[in-house]
Structures are given as structure tokens and as C-alpha cells.
Image 1 (tube, rainbow, N blue to C red):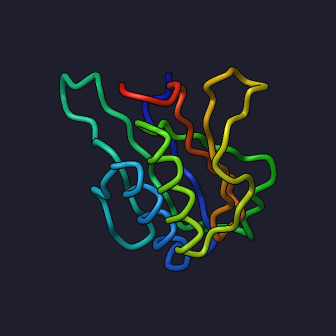
Image 2 (tube, rainbow, N blue to C red; image 1 turned 135 degrees about the horizontal axis):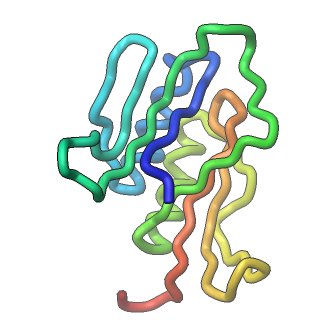
Image 3 (cartoon, helix red, strand yellow; image 1 turned 135 degrees about the vertical axis):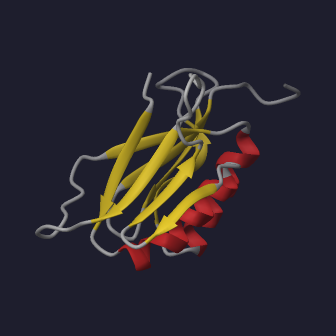
Length: 133
């Protein structure tokens, strides 16, 4: 449903290692790195209708409050959910829910939740049951 999204952080230098780590764990590369902005995914190209893009921006205004913000990223499998969580913790994130089933959503909903260094809540989810794809 979403084409692209931007997340604002108060300290981009502090947030960059976290975002690099969790996106790499999900197989999503950094395609833009410049002062004040990081970009992950696939950039829009004329005629391309199959891309997704995340932009992480440095805040230019007053302090950022990450209250009630939540972004969820698809993981190709449960191992990627676990890698996302481990990479995020190792890169300065905080656990907001360890990898595991969330059967309240559906029986195969396998997810992990983190808070980035700025307090943004991020999730990785795999909707597939365990086993071969």
C-alpha cells in the first residue's frame, strides 16, 4: 500500500548505525547517504511500479517526540526477524518485544519490536508458517 515513507530522528549520526544494521538484516540496502538523510530500498524510476523506499531524515526543528509512531517491515522468513532484532540491539536499539509469535494477529504472525536510538518503534514481521517456503 505504501510507496515510500520518511522517518525523522533527532540525531542522524547516532541513528545511522541502527538503521544500517536492521535494514541490512532484512536484505534492504542503503542507496542514499548524505548530510541529513539516509535512504534504503529502491528509488523511484520512470515506469517502475514495484519499488519501496524508506528515508531517514535529521530533524531540523524542535526536539522529535516519537510517541505512538510505528513502522513495520516485511521479513522474508523468521530467521530475518531474529537477525533484525539482534542487529538492532547490537547497534544501539532497545528491545520492545523479542522475536516470537503474536497469535492475537494470526497463528503464523512472527515478529520482533525495537525502539531506535530516537525512540521510534519499528517491527519486522514474517507472516509465513515455519518450514520451507
